[in-house]
Length: 168
Ligand code: HEM
Ligand code: HEM
Image (cartoon, rainbow, N blue to C red):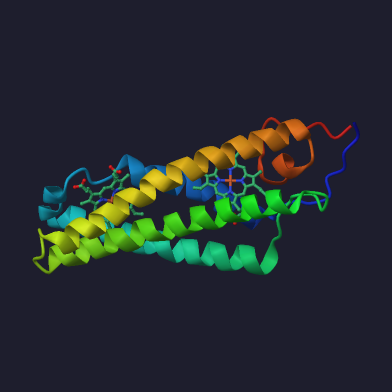
């Protein structure tokens, strides 16, 4: 089948997409395992700075994507599938925001001496729930991307620099 690459994400859009995977992976790699670790002041400050920078970049990414880019889904894609893609994308953005916001709240509460009780426990639950949710959304997202790779409809090529669809 002959396909034409009709839609491409800009260099910056790709840099945001792949850069965030590295940044998010790093955040998970150096994660805080227990609340008690925050007694280390240097770690607490580092976590807070990282979370604020992460949130700032996420907002920049979201505004840039909304203002300048559109989905690569072909116009013939069913409404249901378009909604599904939207829900997964917005869901990932929501989790990516909720993770640093709840993290910052944990840090601020701890800093203010609120180190136990239902408030901080509740915020930690939100922090952990966002992870459980985003892992599911990422699994759906990657499965959908691979599905499109087999459809050879140009969605994969528009964002992914490897295992390219052949444009005969
Ligand atoms: C190997 C892994 C991945 C592949 C192959 C992949 C592929 C893609 C593709 C093809 C698109 C374009 C979809 C369209 O135009 O409708 C896209 C968009 C998107 N991806 Fe991924 N992705 C991967 C991992 C991730 C991860 C881990 C996240 C979240 C942490 C993520 C978040 C997003 C978001 C939010 C969009 C929507 C466009 C935007 O606002 O940036 N992706 N991805
Ligand atoms: C983008 C920023 C952040 C990322 C990527 C991140 C990552 C993680 C991950 C992967 C976990 C394990 C979740 C689970 O087991 O389900 C975790 C837990 C935790 N995070 Fe974060 N975190 C971030 C920001 C913060 C900040 C700013 C703080 C506080 C200063 C913080 C404090 C904690 C604590 C205390 C736990 C352990 C909760 C427990 O007792 O089980 N995080 N974080």
